[in-house]
Image 1 (tube, helix red, strand yellow):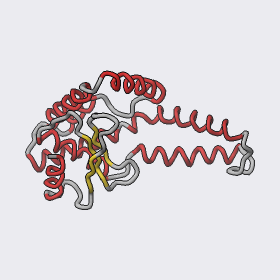
Image 2 (cartoon, rainbow, N blue to C red; image 1 turned 180 degrees about the vertical axis):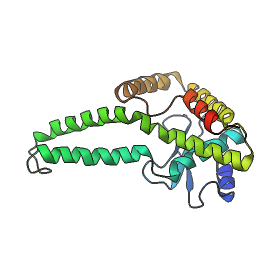
Image 3 (cartoon, helix red, strand yellow; image 1 turned 30 degrees about the vertical axis):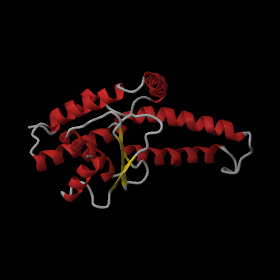
Image 4 (cartoon, rainbow, N blue to C red; image 1 turned 60 degrees about the horizontal axis):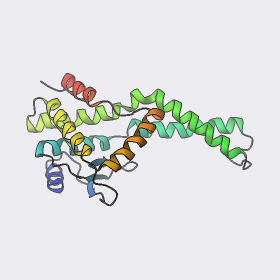
Amino acid sequence: MVLQMFNDLQNEHMIRRWRKIKKLGTSLDSSTDFHGGRIHHFTIYFRLGTYSPDSDELRFILLHEEGHLRTPEFWQVYIAALVVVTMSIFRAIVPNFPITQWWDIPWMILLFLIIAIFSWKICLPILRLDEYRADRWASMELKAKYGVSKPSTLLHRTLSSLNASRRSLNRYRERVAGRYWAIMLRIFGDPHPTDEQRVRRIAEIVDD
């Protein structure tokens, strides 16, 4: 179903012809996952898990991922800027950088982490624009080529179905994943808008 929908969208020129799609393995868990290549922009990866999307939901998901891959994203710009800024600071305060004594390495790593955490939190509102842009791109495509007058309704249904499928994971993995993400979100904050924010934004800027 996913492969057929992907091919259909390519034939309709809604997904670029040279884009590939690849199924993720299921050895670790049965969680649902869709994402584009993190560094390269050639491939969309997916794992359905327990999710059984209808055609409209699957179409929105694939176009959302295509929207992510259409242009460089803010998180990629952030990483590049973080490396440049951090290297500049090290060069200014460490003699003969990058050639250092071994005892310089731990505090250099600590300094990098401090810069990364604080700058990431400061940049969260900008990083969340990545999701908004992908939602908007998918919504505009569906509205123009499929006559979907209220994409926000479809987005709400899709997000609800995805969340329901993720809650169906086994209890042990759910506990482990919950604790892990709780720690990560407390440290870094969430670069994703809430589902309510995403739906409201599409309702305001795309819906009829």
